[in-house]
Length: 342
Image (cartoon, rainbow, N blue to C red; front, top):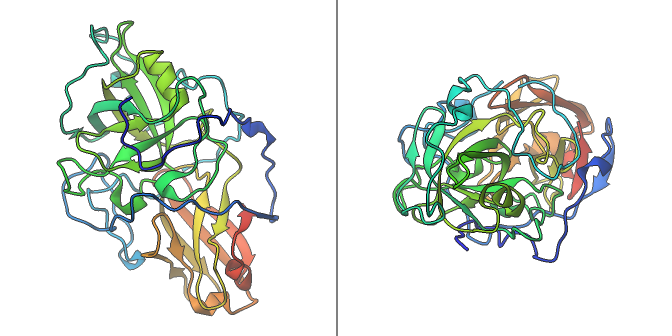
């Protein structure tokens, strides 16, 4: 097995979980399993410059800069909470870019497809090209444990890790300190039967040399069948809206364990795309939450909000589409492991 994701992934005995059980609530609070810390430590946001798959910039007052030009850009539409299918390989994802490259079937067949020569991924305006590997079980098709995105146990079968580097140790890949988390990637790979396609949600990072997109078990099975290896592929960053298999629940804001009136960091779970900014609106001027340094894929809530019972509106901006909002009492964001559905 060719593997490079930080998530020791999901246990091999864990079977698929039907995401149709998720129920959206307007303002309910539920206890979470807690976030799973990355086994590989923490990458720094705002590491060096190089052009990225999809150009973007995070607001200057967010405390985060896209290291590779990012895959991040604000905007999106409304999400679907469809249940996980047997396969998401045939799903079509709305994208601003032309779909012609993705559905072009020319030159897709190959021999010894599982033995693609390891080499650095190549970035382009859509996403990139390079190695497609797996760190999941193609037989068990387990769900993601949340990986370096710190989502904890999820019901997501169609997940993947994205490369941290372009060349070894340069931090110029789209991972970007965790800002890639939650976005989706549609992948096409060469196989003996021609191009095969799948769409996955980013829940983890792949720090290894020559990594491109490292698939979980279910999407790897769709592409590789029983012949696990390193394949050549191409990929594009897209919204998760309307894509089956990548939703574990409805979109929510989750508060990290250990939160209190003097410290709290939050993340968006099951977002419709990668989050580029979270702002808090009170009677005063809107405040842009800073990207957390304690853990990847979290945003820091100001103390003034945590210590107040006044209502606050969180505005969540995504790489694509319209923002989401959550009306909540400020002090509720100081409750560790609380989960607030949008």
